[in-house]
Length: 173
Image (cartoon, rainbow, N blue to C red; front, side, top):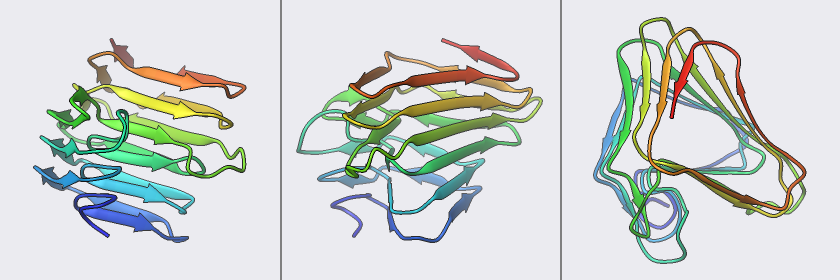
């Protein structure tokens, strides 16, 4: 339900989720995901969208200023034209674009795929964060475009692996 988990979108479904050409601005949640909360689905795809000025209020820090994705989810972020921007998103007062959580306790991995087409930019001015206890996290960058990752990202885990693959294009830190 929007406002509690996911200020604009609360997606707990077994069906794939897709959102394209959107500007999601100024939403708030009192729990997880200032704009979008994703859990229970195998995959979610967001393309050519902007996430600006979201806040996560209450609870602990690192809970998804713009997007909260649970373990077991594959989140595909696709910048196919121009810039896809994450800016001004916070969780408990800290810069945070995407938080990878671990509400599931079955050890299921989380996958974040960043795809930027030639000439496109994923401009992530806010940090990535996670705090998982039994989940592996894999982040993969593909496509000839640019991924700008700003701020200070934090991955707290006792999982076996956290992997960041840059298969194509450029990552600016």
